[in-house]
Length: 398
Image (cartoon, rainbow, N blue to C red):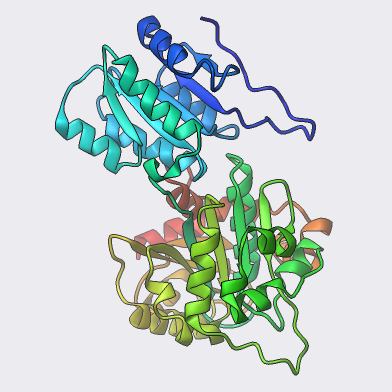
């Protein structure tokens, strides 16, 4: 059995394979091969286990069916959880291993795997599960939904939209995963402008008549910014009403959640009071401010209104453009805000240029990307490799 690689697609991206198998056990591979030979003849086999799968999923698209061997792993459930975080929602994960333990089975399936089989594999059981997945009987497959990220500016002009855009872009690129960005400022939103694309009325229509949203509506209404990043944004006339019920947003999020790995929602501050249920859903909320005194005050007010973090919802306070003219020192900001921020993005000329010129004219923003790395690691489940900046070290000491 020789390792194979996904063939590149015509657009230069790796084509998403239908099935990938990761096991060095020849007997297990033989059972799996026999089970799916007539359904997926182009299956890719790797002579390695779950660690190799983690490495490959971090670099390219995930398959429809992924089978990995957890034999020898100290924390198989933890590895499965990491792997699930790297796979697209449409990927069905089956785990095999060398331990017959009901607690292990529960841990692995609760982490997101469809099933766990211990070796020696029983061919009829493996064949049944694989066939159910590959023939589209999705009722047997656990439905996984996108991870929600809400981005809220503590006040206007602090760069929340720019951070929402950079976050969505980065999450769609490394590893490549499908991401949707929704700009809820229907009258004056800047997301489409920064991407240099033309907004449509689809988002306004979806929020006005959520029952109309189906696959055809989404295909026509989504703006494809890149191969992996879609945008829903409207630019309604100034005198056009743009209010919507929160139930409509919840319905829209439910309908798109199975299509994407991440959904980033840019929420203008004036929308927040009407979205209490949404902002307390299982999610990550990025609260963005700058380093001015008014931001310190507003950050404290937002934390009090949103409440403490829970097991399902985490708020991350990001101070953007820290050190710019008019900003407090890190110590003074922390005292005024009542708590140190979680992430600090120092002032940089390219950050301002990125917001003013848009991504087409200014695609690279290393200062912001480096600053966002801790938040991106938390969102994606990766380990934090970010080195603290001087400003972040100052905040950490307070």
